[in-house]
Length: 216
Image 1 (cartoon, rainbow, N blue to C red):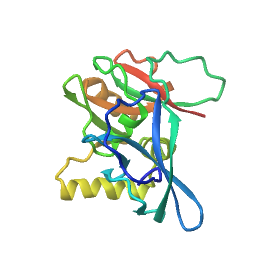
Image 2 (tube, one colour):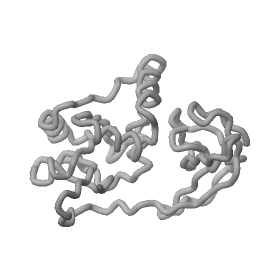
Image 3 (spheres, rainbow, N blue to C red):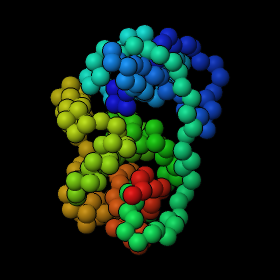
Image 4 (spheres, rainbow, N blue to C red):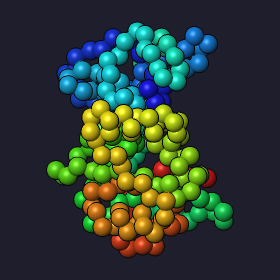
C-alpha cells in the first residue's frame, strides 16, 4: 500500500474536484492509521496502492501494516502545480526539485502522477509516455524520494521494481549515481522525469524545474 490505506466502491458519474483528493483511511490492530489515494479507474473509485489500483474493501492486507480495517474516506487538498520560479533561499537551506528537459512539453505533473510514474504505472502527457529517472547521487536524496514521492521503504520499493520486471517484463528505471550524468540524460530526453537538489540544476539552461518537492 505505500502510503497506508476505506470501504465500498461506488460507480462514478461526477468528475473529481481537481483541487481536492480523496484518501481511504484504514487502521491496524494497534490503532495506527494508514491512508491511500483514491481516484476513478475504469469508472469506479479505487485505491492507488504500491501494487497499482486495487478495490476498496473493508479489510486490506498490507505488506507493512498487516491486516487493516477500513475507517473512513478523507478529503485532502491537492498541492498547486504551477510553473515554478525558485524563491531566494536562506543560507544553508536545501530544496529537492522535480526536473525535466527544457524541451519537455509537460506543463504540470502533480504529486499523484509523479508517484504513479515512479511506481511503474503508465503516465502519458501530450501523447508521450513519460520515463522515470532515479537519482541515487547521495543517500539524502534517496531518503527524501522514498519518503516524499513513493512513500515506501527502500526494500519494498526495490521489491516492487523487481516484481514488475520479472512478472510484467517492465524495464526498470534508469539509475544515476553521478549528478552530471543524470543531468545529461534528462536534458537529452524530453520524456524523462527526475529530481535533484535545486542548486545543482537551477542555472542549467538545458533543464526546467517544474516545482519544488521538498524544502529543508
